[in-house]
Every structure is written in C-alpha cells, then in structure tokens.
Length: 137
Length: 273
Image 1 (cartoon, rainbow over the protein chains, first blue to last red):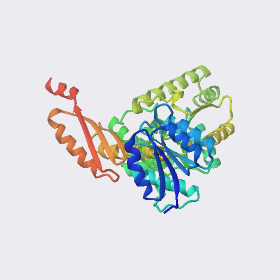
Image 2: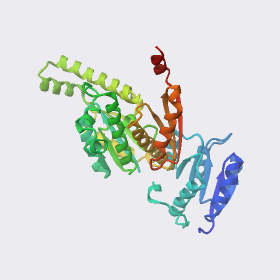
Image 3: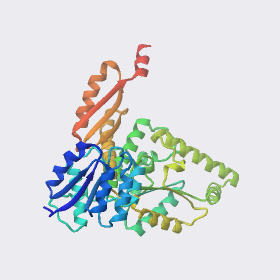
Image 4: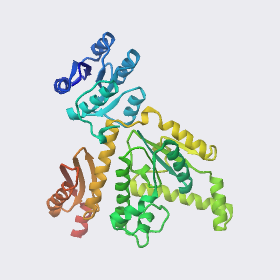
C-alpha cells in the first residue's frame, strides 16, 4: 500500500465521489472529495495533491480549466480526466494541456485504480495494484 | 505511444514515406506484406484480397460478399496489429476504418500531379492530357470506392490530421514533419483511446465471425458488450437474433450480446409480390 498518496477527486455528481472514495482508499489513497469545482480550486491552492481526478463537464468551471489551474500551481501533480462525454478532440486537448490520463465513463473502479497505480509509479510511490502489460500506455 | 496511419494517392510514394517514418521512430511498419497471412486465415485467395483494396479494379468474378469478407479480414488483421502500438500503417485502407482514436495520427500524402501524369504518359505511351484524364478517373474511383465500402470520402482533407503535398515538400521533409508531429502529447495513447481501439478490434472480429453466415450485420462493441444490428423478415427475426447471439457470444472477449433485428421491408415486399 502507498503511504498517504494524496488524491483530490472532483465530480459534480455526488454518487461518483461516494463510490470512488472507498475504492481508492483500498489502495492507500487519502481522498478528498469535492462536488463544487470552485471549492476544489481553493483547496488545490492550499495543498499540493499527488493526484487530481476531475470530471470534465461541470457548471461554471470545467475540468480543462481545473487541469490548467493545477498545471500552473504544481508540475508534479498528476491530473486524471474522467468524462461521460468523451470525444477525440477533448481527449487530445486534455493530453496537450498536460493531463496524465483520460478515462471515459462509465468505468469500473479497477480502471481508475490501474491509472492511479501508474501515476503513483511515476511519482515514485508504490501502490500494490497489478497492472498488466496490455494496460500500460 | 502512438500509431501513424499514412495514406496516399500513390501507393509507392506513400510506402516510401511510411518506411522512412518507421525507421526514424523505430515503429513497426505494417503494409501489404500481411495480406498473405490474411489470405491464409480467411481462405480467400491472396489476389482477391489484394483486389479488394484496389478502387479501380474490375469487379468481374468478385462478388460483393467475397469483397466484403476480404476487407473485413484485412481490417481484423490490421486492428489486431494496431493494438501492439508503435506502428506505422500504410496501404491497408486503415484511414477509412480507424476513426475517432485520439492516439492515431492520420496523414494524407498527395503526390505531385505533374510528375504522376508524366509517369503515366510514358508508361502507357499516351499524351500528357490523356494521362491527366486517367489520373482524374483514378481519383474519382478512389473517392467512389471509399464512400461505397466504408462510407468515408478519402479525398476529404478533414479526415486527416495532416495533408502533405509533395509538390511543395520533398519526401524527407514530409517524413520529418510526421515524426515531429507524432511526438506531441495529444497523439499519445491514454486509457480512453486504447479502449476505443480495443472496442473497434472486437467489433470487427465479431463482424468477421458473423459474416460466415450473415453478410448484413453491423457490429459495435463497448468493453465486452457487443451490439449487433441486422435486418430480418418478421418470421425469421427471433431465430436469426438467437443464432447471432449464440455465434457472437463464443468469440473471446465477448461477455454480452445484444441483437437489434429490424424488419427487412424490401425482402418482405419482394416476397409478397
């Protein structure tokens, strides 16, 4: 298990945070869940997270703006984008702006855990979660 | 990692650029060498497999059923290779069926029309004007073929990330531009784009398996869930749907099959006449 991998999870649908928080806690992540992107941005300004997981389509502030905000405040933080409206152009834009990965909803908690484990590896942290060869990018 | 799809209005030119790009990036080159394997796996003679990729070739002695199965066999083989990543693919019409995958960089190489016309004029011993007409015919045939078979217009520049005209840029410079572009982060693979590619690979594999029995199926996949759309007479709808479900569910990677069979009104009208 990773020791205290700090994760901020932002999705305006409460069910997402409710389901994913325990799933990520199982692999040793300390998860702070936000439904309001403005509050999430405030928290990002206060604390450097290891990983930020953000929905893309939200009112007022969208996930790409969150990504840009994180990129300005921390080079180290890995940003994982999740969306129910995945399209090639958005995926490319997110990657170009520095997203670590991009996942289309619906996904299984294991899908996100695999990506978190990859991000943790790049951060020099170690998460005990098996990543098969074919899952790597 | 990424995949580079190169298509061209002239096979040899596109191939030469693809080779250069593959060498510079250390990616595998995927081209018509795989057609022998495709022929063995599909049990369709290799000349017919090759002919299915030729827009201007005669369709005499080549039923649309065989052509469709040949093309589906090529697609299945190509998609399987593309899953390996780090591939430069050329000459297999992949630009027409690998759509919407963000880590696939699509390139169209346009050759110098004057040079091609001169080559045709000397090869066929015709005047330059006649050669130009032949070129125009070839382009129209390519457009018609891509629309007929894949519903995509290969001459439409919006299909591609980059269109390079070799009348202004030499092939070396074109290869360098492609190598530089593929290094952009936007063309790197991600969980979503890999899933898109896997879904496409599974759907063509299922379609190919079903084509042995049913030529009129459209297949989409989402993870291990497969949706098959087909047409059937009212009286055979249930039986056909069940048969498709049984066949598709035996394919590795499939866990759930949904069949949407709509009434084949043309066949019903023909039978009632």
